[in-house]
Length: 373
Image 1 (tube, rainbow, N blue to C red):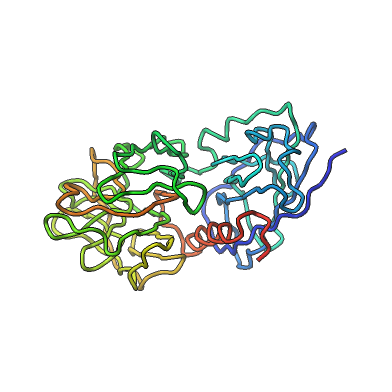
Image 2 (tube, rainbow, N blue to C red):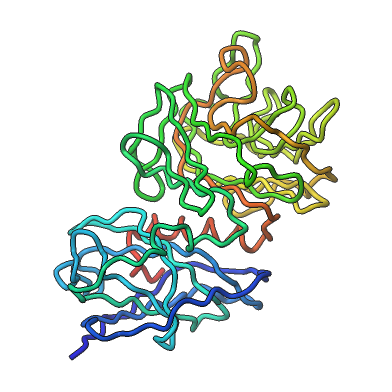
């Protein structure tokens, strides 16, 4: 007999007219799974359909009837499965962290979100089931994602969850596994960086989106020996610093999205206004859609965007978090924490940007997927 869990209502409003094909998984065979739990995305009240959106779902002991004791593999979550609302199409997912008895963080590729009644199912309770390959091979993140760093590691490298394997290297002075928006985050002590080596997937010369959750310990960031401060949150710049893309603190101007179009001068988005408050988490998104360069804070656009130009090639220079191109001692470092860093080769719509912020913000506020706010 299969037991059905209580409804999980994932509190997030979504608004996106997405392009691309809907991801279709394998046909799901529910034999051996003793538990079935509906998950409803109740906050989607806008027109249009969101396609292949990676939604964060949290599981917590005792929430609406969920118990790790009912899992076939309570220590790993290996028997967890997700399907569409028909219960037939298996969905890609990735476990960021799994904590038996605590809170677990899972990213699910939701094929289509159309209205407030859109739902999927979580299945579990099968001790014979093993984790599918798609949980670790990057399938949860479609081809527009070029890097996704969860920053949940407690030591070692900074893993990229996409198929591109743009893994990061943490320098001395990075503290891993500090408190973040989703599980752990990485703390930068004011003289440290994370870098990801150049790759073809990171060589973006058209539209792009760069995002991360950011917690400033010092505002403005520390000034370097030159008397200036230009630290990246996330950026890939080369050609002497005049090529590339990303977000960084532009000395007296503040936090901006920047394009290096080659030649003299950067193209700048409207700056973030007001400056961030220290010791508060913010979601920042820099977006270039092929015509306008924009900066978003917590899902809200700053200004009206600036006419822009394509970023120029940056090979062989890496992505750098925490310091701009060149000498950090001279031009300053970021001091604070970063979480959920992402790079895409599309200019995300305002609705997608808002949805990413809202999904994580609501989950943090609620602490588990069962929040009904």
